[in-house]
Amino acid sequence: MPMTIEEIIKRLGGPEQAARLTGVSTEAVRKWRQARAIPPKHWTVVLRETGLSLSDLQPATESDRPEPPMTAPSPTVPAERPPAATAALILADGTVLWGRGFGAHGEAASAIGEICFSTGMTGYQETLTDPSFAGQIITFTFPHIGNVGTTPEDDEAARVAARALVVKEDLTAPANWRSVESLDAWLKARGIPGICGIDTRAITRRIRDGGPQTAIVAYPADGRIDIAALQAQARAWPGLEGMDLAREVTCAKPYAWDEGVWHWPHGTVPLPAKRRRVVAVDYGAKRNILRCLSSAGCEVIVVPATATAEDILSHDPAGVFLSNGPGDPAATASYAVPAIRGVLDAGKPVFGICLGHQLLALTLGAKTYKLERGHRGANQPVKDLATGKVEITSQNHGFAVDDKTLPDGVRATHISLFDGSNEGIASDRYPAFSVQYHPESSPGPSDSRYLFDRFVALIDSLSPTA
Image (tube, rainbow, N blue to C red; front, side, top):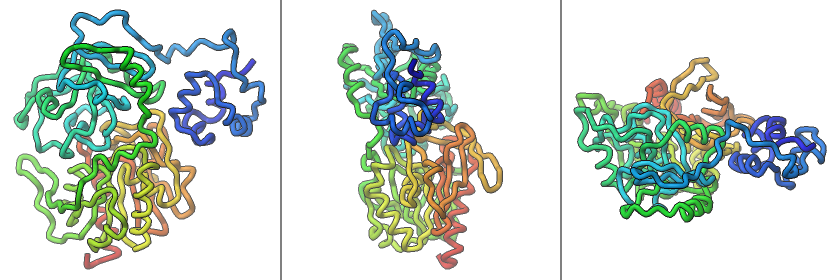
């Protein structure tokens, strides 16, 4: 009798290892599970890696097919719309969850994206305006959203990057002295819909067990929701893999940044007298990252994601920073890698985070892959391999650097204690290092802010007069 897909994937070393060995995404592996069959074009690799026979891979007959595991929730399509429902969450697998809408009404297509979950208990405004969430619908696992209201000072970018949000409870009324506007009014003003009354634990388990998928938040002004049409639309959306979203969220032209980090209630911290000129390549940079660079002693010049090496070097920087950002790093690499390579060849110190980390790794010869679940939240443990110290970090990424593809002269410096995936690299040939997480801590803990000082120290070691 043929082996089950779950048994074969286990023999390959798990979903992520199966994806690496066969050269596909973890989303493709998820589809193997759904179809309960591995495409024949991958059989040669599977046979070689597992020692199985061809008969083990033959698709099972209907009578042989096992029942799906109880931990994998089946699609739920309610027969009737509940009387109080004003919005719906539609998933690509056919699931429909009814709820109450808030925020902005709009066309359903404007709220289509990859659904993900964030485990942070604070900082919903910073999360929504983080450009790394472009193309995504955020499920907040913390139930009380809206309790501190909103303020322009907490925006991490000029516009909201996320396409919609999903929460469990009705939005909480703001109760904070800094609040300028309720979250509901803030979302309305920015054209972002949301839905509450959703079992966010069930959504989180679905993503955890089955991987990411496309979703739509439908909250039309006229109340009409065509479920069948929206299900078809969700199935047809291509997903984030292969998408270059950095172009959508980057700045239009270079600009200078000279604001330091916040120090409540006194405003911002005074900037150091000594300033090193640093060019920050904006793949979707958060404002607090730029504040941290300034407070560490950098004169920051921000340039668009598409800036060439010549554009970057024309500012005569003492160092170059590669920012966070959304989308598939392999897609952004088409123009980012040549620019980064030119900067490295010029001998400039380089520091990257998040997407910038992945792009530096690609430039140095490594590969990236799509994570099965992604890391999003302000409570992610990361181990520094040199010191053994564990940092609690803020993270937001759906792709990662493949440790096994790091070339000679590039070493892993940090790993995730959740799944062992790569969280940092450093080059022995170039003055360059990067981390997968967000050391600017907005929102989240400040364990990793030392990295900005490390970058400045690297600049000073190579250019004492910078």
